[in-house]
Structure formats: C-alpha cells, structure tokens
Length: 341
Image (tube, rainbow, N blue to C red):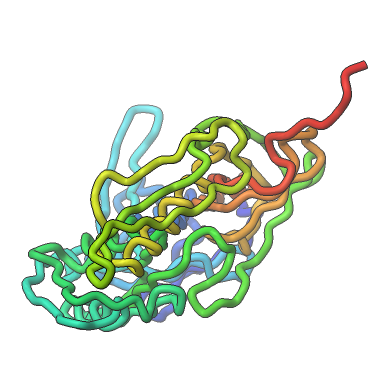
C-alpha cells in the first residue's frame, strides 16, 4: 500500500525513511501539556523478523507533511503476534530520557532565592537547563528545598502551586504561565481553526462539564509586619453558577506566595470549565497550550478553547488525522442567546 501522507524518520541524525518505507504501518505522536512526556509510536510489519531493533537510547525525529512533530529517545520496543494480526514490531520513544537523572531524588536547600534560581539548581543536578517564565522567575522565598523529590516531581509540584505548565523535552525544561496561549518566551503559539463541513471530522464537547462552582478563590497568609492574618482573593472569570468563595485550607508562606497560589487556582478553575475533543484532518501546527477556534457547529459550542493535548496519527494506505483535547472555553462558549419562538 502507498502512503497518502508525506513522512520522514531520522535516527541519530540519519534519514532512514527509505529503509522504513516498505515496513512502516503507522505513526502516532502525542503532545501533552504539563509533565506528561511527548510520545511517539512507530508500528512496523515484522512478518519475517526483518526489522532491526534500534539502540535503546537512539534519538528519533519524526516529520509529517514536512513539519517536525517529534524528537526524543527510544524508550521501548514491544513485539506482538496474533493470528490474523500478524507480527508487529513497535518502537516507542519519549520526549526526554526517562532513565536519566530527572527522576533521581535531590537533597539540598537555598535561602532567600528566587524560583528561577531554585529550579535552575534542580535542573543542573538533573542534567537539564530550564527556562522560567518572567511571570514566575522573580518569585522569592526565604527557603527552597525539594526534600528528596526528583527534578521531575518537584517541577510538577511547583507548577500545580503556581498554575504553571512544567514541560521537559530533550535536556531542556520550561516553566511557563498556563492558559494564555503563549510560549515561555512570550511569543504566541499557533492558532488552529476547525470548521465543521471542512476540516473537522468529529466533535465531542461539553461546554459546561466540570464548570467551577466557586466565584472566587481565596488564599490566606500571615503578615509578620502587621502581626495578623491577611488574604488574597481572585475572581474566576466566566463562572455564573455560584456566589460561593473557595478558601484554601492551608496558609501561604507570605503575600507573594498567596498571590501566586490564588492565581494558580484561578487558572486551573477556568481551565476545567469545559472538556472534550475535536478530530481534524492533519494539522501539524497544533500544539498543547495553543488556541483552537471552532466554527460551524452550533451556538454555545462554536468558539475559542485551549488545547491541552494533541495526537497526530497517520497510517499506511489511509490518511492522517489530528485529535485535540480541549479545555478552558472562552467568550460565548456554553452560552445560547437565541430567543425561543
């Protein structure tokens, strides 16, 4: 069968596409927000055992329609056989080395340092470099310590506390502001447009599922100078189901910490205001944390969403598709202002 989608695969910098072409059956690449590693799965027809196993730490690069969509290291090579299904060799790769020091526990501390300094130290010990969004870089604490957590685990913990995205690719990590459709550098991520009747294959969206039930988020802290408890309150946008205020049960370390935690909870609450997915013909520009605009569906469904995950699929003899996981509805999503006849 001839491929209908242009693709290319490089291993350790060498283009091996021509060698793979008679045997490659399918390609699947997943890009997710947060700490979940990017993944790639290549499936080969191994009917005669002719496919060579790659080195466990080989670097794999994948292109679809001429665009780079994945780079990572081989993680596993499962082989399967079934009557009717034949013999299939799969090569699974991940966006960073899961066998490296990123998962090793760390014991150290920093006094009177910024978040950028602390994450930088943790990254260096794990063999990574890290870029911290300016929105978080200057946050200062009297004491930082991973307390035995790995760079991966500690980065994830800090991301949850600050409403950030912590992502690792290769030997580079980023700690970026979440839900604003921008890269850590501040540059806008590509906007993907889906139009029902054109490039949209399927829609499965609930614009109200998971909608936050609180109007505000409140975080308390103790102001030592004033010798009294204080609080930071932020409003949850586009929420009209409750006037209740959600108060965090534990104290923040100080005012800056309280503000960061309140903003983080606000970001998470707005992000969870809708869940679902949209299937498209192949859109190689789609990226997690980017923006998706849906049109041609119906009032209350059409509108703007945040992309939380991307899956590109291509197979021999078939076409190629992109499935987007969506959240954080904006504007008129979830609203139907039409007047009943």
